[in-house]
Length: 184
Image (cartoon, rainbow, N blue to C red; front, side):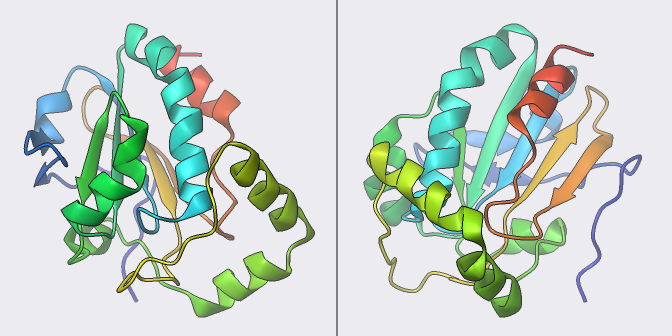
């Protein structure tokens, strides 16, 4: 079993590269709050909808001193084709070997994916993604059973919220992220 992080723990340091070749480190974000979001794969319609929501809020979050780092278990080429097409103003990190996923204790669960597909609210979420232009698209070699997670990390690198999704669609409430960015 992978060890999951808890609030009050130091967020594990990492060094990665975004899809444009720029360096991304947790250390470079010191002094700012961070939303670190782990997604499934770059073609995932539900993940792309979430990134779309983040893009809409990012100017407000950034003005309040919060950075966003979005990690996908996909190769860089796929990232550029799918989620990269949204031109997110924050770091999109390809982690096809799932090193960061392992570091942060992000799980894989066929049972949770099946529970999501059986959940009544999932159809509405899929419909919302379709309206936003994101279709259910398979991505060759992707980990279909990866479960998303989101972390709110303070200016000192301490995890304030560790949200491991129960379902694929069970994300942190955007209002909670807004409050964290605003220091409320």
